[in-house]
Amino acid sequence: MIIDTPIGKCQVVYDDTFICEIRWENEIIEEKQYPKNNLSDKIKMQFNEYFTAKRKEFTLPVKLNVRGFSADCLNFIFKHVKYGKTTTYKDIAIALGSPNAARAVGNAMNKNPIPIIIPCHRVVGSNGKLVGFRSGLDNKKWLLDFEKNN
Image (cartoon, rainbow, N blue to C red):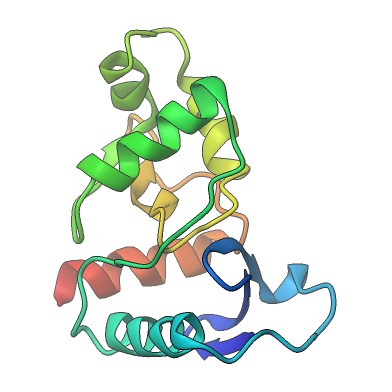
């Protein structure tokens, strides 16, 4: 399913039960027909609510096909980094018991298969600067500003 957002199109890849991947406009592979079901309706509704500042947290079912430290990083930001807040790659590494693994955290964020829902845009450099975002730093800034102001 292709969804128009204020930062461009994104493709939500899902099956009958779970969201499997979200691709940014520059990553869309093909437009195919996805099942029209309760999940498709919830996806449209929750994305609309998020981008109109009516939703602060997604409650969509996801299938995270990531393992090990990367899964730990993504689960951490999903559970602990709330709307309008940020954390750093280093802080996540420390919280996960690997204080020297900030680069590994960055790698996990870069490979996040479900951005927006798993909010990797809320992770910044130790100096507060915006670094790394598959959709581009302008979009990361837009998302952070949007959440901060709503």
